[in-house]
Length: 413
Image (tube, rainbow, N blue to C red; front, side, top):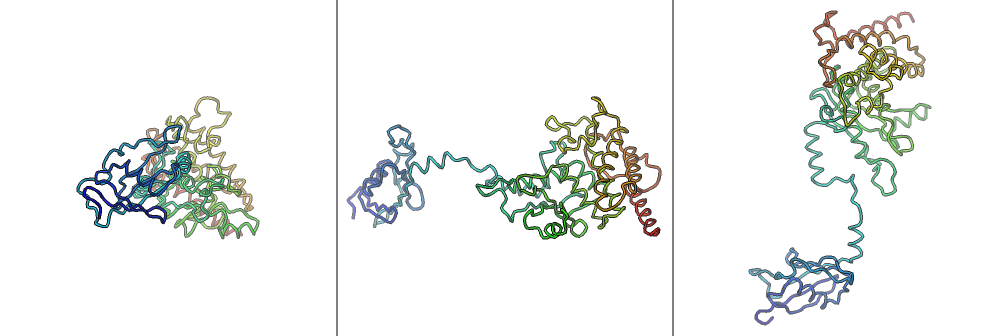
């Protein structure tokens, strides 16, 4: 048994143990020195003493040039506070040691900015419950319609993109941010809202192991996205073929609208291209309205952020902002040019759908109220009070006309 006023202390360190006698009021600094001396631990190891699961003494890194340890603020306090019961067999103290070189190396390393902490993960979960949002489009925009929206986002995690030290491809977190940007794009929000669309999931196509993509490649085609069960799920190929980065944003948005058009029509026929062209016009017109409304996001127009400014404002328009009719004319020309290239792959002339696309644009421009320009909130087409042509919306009238043309084309065959 230890003498009165003394405690038996058993130090354990890396499989070794030493039993010593120490004063009941021994300080933390003195107990650290006693542990180092009794266990013969080198001076370049920083020690920590643990008793009953709690740290009772700890050294700090050397702050002097001679390598001596800096005094700890807690070093003068008692190692065993008053009232703490010490077993009769003695206090069993676990000694932990870390090389100073290892600590210095760890402190010099930069934490991975893409790794979420617990607080960030909690915030991410709460944001997901509140709805998909994005700061990319500024405080006034950047949110989906509460009803017509993408219910869930899913980035590709199977290949652990961007998590390996030698990886050059963007991290999966970056892919999710891009999906959020697409889902909250003002033009995409408008297309979803006007057509009352709800998509179960917007996901990233696996650029390495996607079965449909591999099948298309064997057929000599290139698959950039696909629509499952008419909008239950839409997957977009976000990454380039060499995985070094993401595809241009304007191409991604066009691919997304292409897949949304498959919600109604599966085949790439005249009806599909008519619907797709009208959706593209509406997408670009939404960004054009934000230009007319004078909205800037971090000093840029949303059309510039979406990389579609050259489809809305032509160099020949001059320095002044074009009028509404001129902007719509530019948009229709851009969309028809875009359609011509894509429809040629399916051996369809763009003249088959051009009148419907242009007519849709004129109706859309007429229905756009001046007081709603620049707000960027999605609304249903055909709700304008000056729409006295019929009870149908612009989209419904355009689809009816396209269906009629498709029937007539089949009858001619």
